[in-house]
Length: 127
Image 1 (cartoon, rainbow, N blue to C red):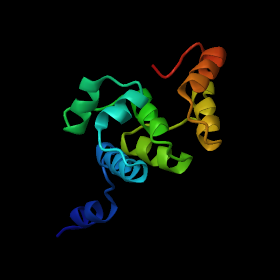
Image 2: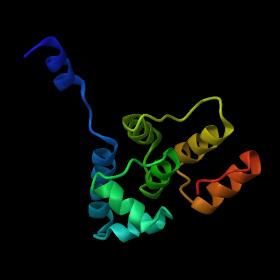
Image 3: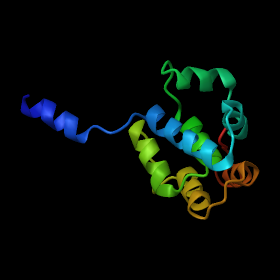
């Protein structure tokens, strides 16, 4: 095995979908739920997009990843890991990202409150 292969084997992390579905499985066990529809409905996500993502045929947008993370009530470290696995991050210089950091850090997972605040300060929401 050459140095590159060794480095790849030692440093490669789970993919975004592997991470999210691991969290979904944990959430299902913790809350005695067994249907994907609960999660994609809670996240206000289209069933078809969720299905494509589940079967590896689709890369989610940052907003869709954030919606799933909020629906799963992940903490900020977990959200950052999931975002990083997809090549995204929560910026420290964008109001949109800072507002999401605030809500996640304070364990406020109410989509209506989050979207109202986002719209008030940025004229955008998680849709």
